[in-house]
Image (cartoon, rainbow, N blue to C red; front, side, top):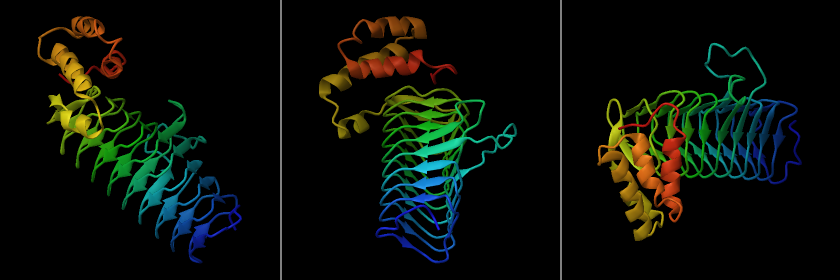
Length: 265
């Protein structure tokens, strides 16, 4: 039996839970689900039937995992040789049918990490060593390769692919069927094969409560990078003239300054 006081839990008798697994309170686990001994599941999680959770994996509170999802499996990197890497998941995430989430590798931090309040739609794939923030949406069939970082409130449209080591900035929007080969700065909308910038995610910013002044200043910064035919270095000089008084603009500037693959232009 799992290490749990079983308080208010609803665990189907045909679920397979290895000794050593830790199950929180008020957890529901469906039939034919397998949970490895190196798994911790927090309170109030709902795990459907036919789910596989391997480890080491730590899952927070209030997560919902739908049928046929594979969580915390060995990664597909051919360099992986069974090292004890980890997957850490925050709270209140939803993993829809057939999601695949892989653990990290020793070539990075030995860790794949997912924040809280994210939605992973059916057949989405998160590869090894990815770092995903909070309140993100990965639509159906999105695949992100190894070492990808995704900032808070980012949305990636269905059937899109993200190349390894790319960064997707906070509050950005990647349209359906996009192929992301370079970094997408914060707030930027991207689309195409390969993905190119298509303006700011202004509607998303309004919905999240950004003020008119904040959006105006973000637009000024966007124009410096994408409308004034400046080099990245010169554009950052222009942006840094007003970045200190505008923390929202600082997020945009930092997403460009920290880029190692270069940004979409």
